[in-house]
Amino acid sequence: MAGSAVQVQLEATVAGDPPLPVYSLALGNPRASAGLGIFGGVHGLERIGTQVVLAWLHTLVTRLHWDQALHRLLEDVRLVFMPIVNPGGMLRHTRANPNGVDLMRNAPVDAVDPVPLLVGGQRISAGLPWYRGPRGMPMEAESAALCAVAERELQGRAFSLALDCHSGFGMADRLWFPYAHRRSPIPQLAQLHALHAIFHESNHHHPYVFEPQSHQYLTHGDLWDHLCLRALDRPGTVFLPLTLEMGSWLWVKKNPRQLFSRRGIFNPLIAHRQQRVLRRHLPLLEFALRAAASWQHWLPQGEQCEDHHRMALDRWYRRAP
Image 1 (tube, rainbow, N blue to C red):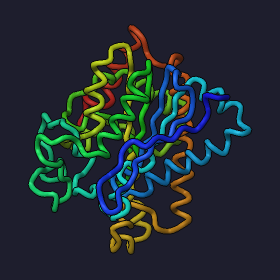
Image 2 (cartoon, rainbow, N blue to C red):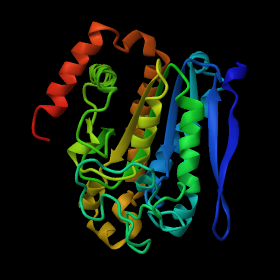
Image 3 (cartoon, rainbow, N blue to C red):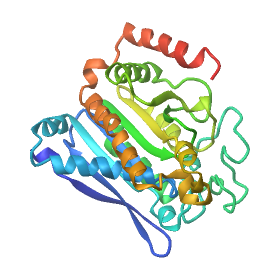
Image 4 (cartoon, rainbow, N blue to C red):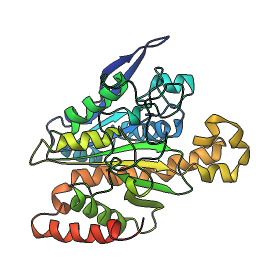
């Protein structure tokens, strides 16, 4: 079907030596009522996130010539990929971009509640980690490119999901949802709880901890918080961003020598463990595609929203994190 053609677009050229492009790739019907965005490589050290995105993209593209069920899904979903949001950081083996800016601290959002020192974002120096960038300046080209793709390809649709792939926190794989700048619930809490419910029902043995990011720590400048706040200006649409935070401490526990490598703290270095990680998250990505395509059959309406909102408060906000 014509709607399944692969479309590649240059979103930005990142300053540096050499200048590097930031690409997005899209599949599916441009006029679909639903969208799904898959992002990776926001932090240059977290290569496994990009590898997960590319592995699933490769799977989909190789299925296009024979999988008619996939073609039918792509009639209902606009699917967009940004595998390497921060190519300069990945080239230089740094978390930040070539300007020293942590892209996930770069949005114009200041935390309402207290954030941890430095980790929550700082403007002291680009020589220190978690640098937000100069006050009052536009977002970095990479951050602006991610936001432009999300707003163009996702937020204008009746329903959209985003999944941003990271690594480096804890021994469990986590699915975080906003907010990162405050502890109070996101307005789309009922819809997120309904998404969690169908995921848990259809994947009883999944490995993920599904929770607000605020249960772990708060930050300034989170890009997904920024996009969520902007989405509030689009009534009649639902935008649900998730962050997949792969628990890289487990890889270090199994291979303590990885502690002596910057890359090893955030990525599995042994080949069979890397392959296991790439396989591990395929069911999540396939679920996200099918949930987006079928959003009208599970998204709560009316009194259902009230029920899901109440259950979400009980699950995530009326107990100690």
